[in-house]
Image (cartoon, rainbow over all chains, first blue to last red; front, side, top):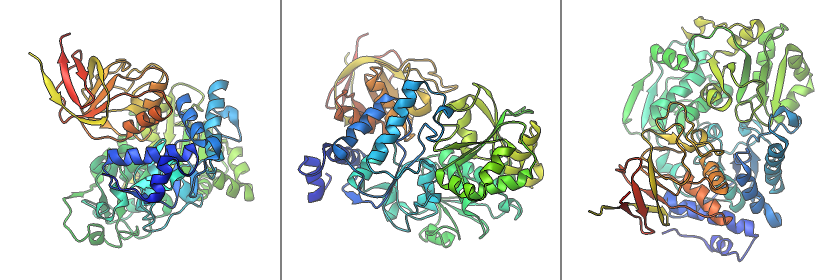
Length: 418
Length: 137
């Protein structure tokens, strides 16, 4: 039996609020029953993934929620939509579908969502703090906010995410509860070389291994150096959440609930310790690429959305030598504003960069052809590209991506992986 | 001889129809086309099979969080399965069905049953209490 507060009962009964408030509370309560939660928990922020167009039904549902001025009750950011709102025709949808995709984004704005349109909201100012209860969608953002920020969320998806934002409640189960946040598995990377542990390209690969090895089980990675950057952790979380249903992975010595490995394990012995070897890393890296590739058709980066730092690193690596194939940088408005400050956006465009803002090349049709080879430094792009776009993926470091884009041929520097 | 089995009701309802059994795990998002209802997951044994109007038996459903939107879209376009019997507990598909109910587009029964023992082509009837009865074809 689920126990509801007076306020929750009143909203559910339609005694207070709009019909949309009632619908949202009903969806949260019914979901809570299915999930086996005994109560709801108040939440302080939400990140909504339901603004990406999958078909007309989702648009009609969200517009129904938004009727009579229904508002989200807590700060709520939006994940990517299907359109670049500053360049509508970048998305190759027919006019009818484009209009529906736009209506879906607009309905979220009308409900009071902050129009961030990014899969990296944590780099656009939405940073819940340690122990705060939130309801976030978008798998990488869920893994990041749980693991790196120490806020508490389950993996929320379409409709339930916005329903939680409207009702300011979430079913109290899973990773909202302290007892479910303890690591049960330990991945030990301490035998890898110090050089490899410093490489940007190592982190998305490590993430894809975490996803495959742990799935839904909470784990702790032991043996990372103490100077891992936020962008490296972002790449790790995105890789983990694309190959497995990873909601939380502690990084020992780095993340707030893991000052050390023993704390992440709540003082218990792990159910299993998995030593990560160089051979396993190479195998995981290889699994992100299509064998037998020589030429590439494009480079796409920014899954999760590229940060200001990542854009500037790409610019520096290119060293004013322009690209022979299109290079797509998927990013958010927050990053574009930074780049515009000193004209870095123009410098990147002059090299041959196409900016994809508010959306990305893998969730909506933007790429020019039905097939081809797409090179990326993102494990998440490598994982989803073929199914969603028809392009076969090749994975490499950011410098590999830059050099390959400049030559049109695949260039891999294998010394990265020693 | 009449065969009966009892399952756990996630979303209650009645249905009679033909089973489509999924031999390997499937995610509705990326795995089932909203345009045709067909299985489109690359290399999946049921690739090419239409899911519309079948009773889907899925021993291992992968819970991609966008699957709620896919099932809602299938219901909206009249391409929904008649019912789903899932081997593992899942909230994501039911959320899409609750949304469909709320907006008045209908509903389908969702049941869970450990190690569901059916094969493609079997005919079954599902009752609101979770009972599943085999029918003569």
